[in-house]
Image (cartoon, rainbow, N blue to C red; front, side, top):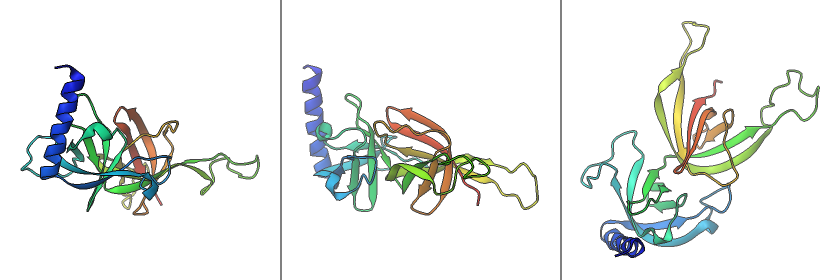
Length: 214
């Protein structure tokens, strides 16, 4: 049996499994870097189930682990698609060969923007970026935002100093949008941060952001 035939049979079997153990799921495919869950982006309704990446369907995923294996017919899906079920939203990170699709469960909606330089010399006496003068790169994308074991400590060393949290952000990539160190992060909780590390992988963006001090 050739690989194409085997892949077709495997996906057919995954569809049968999804109809048995999965739930009705809306599939969204972003058409722009803005509002990927806009109703116009819903392309079909299907059954989908999810299994912890450790492979035990009877065990819950652990805290801080957003990765799941998808059980659904991947003939109709691709990396970067969103899967919406009641109470949960995931995106497909990758579909590699005969392996189950790897999905990321999201917990926040995030916007990434870039500060624009001053519009004219002398308009800004310190020559830096002006708050609010930004270009939105990706708007309102469901993403996984989880804390990491690191924190920034002010150099002053005052008794009232507090550490500044870092977060890891996993989100799909969008063609022609390259996220960079120094880009501005915000989420649906009103939190703001600065990107201090950006890595584009075959599974999308992996960002490290540092909460902006107020």
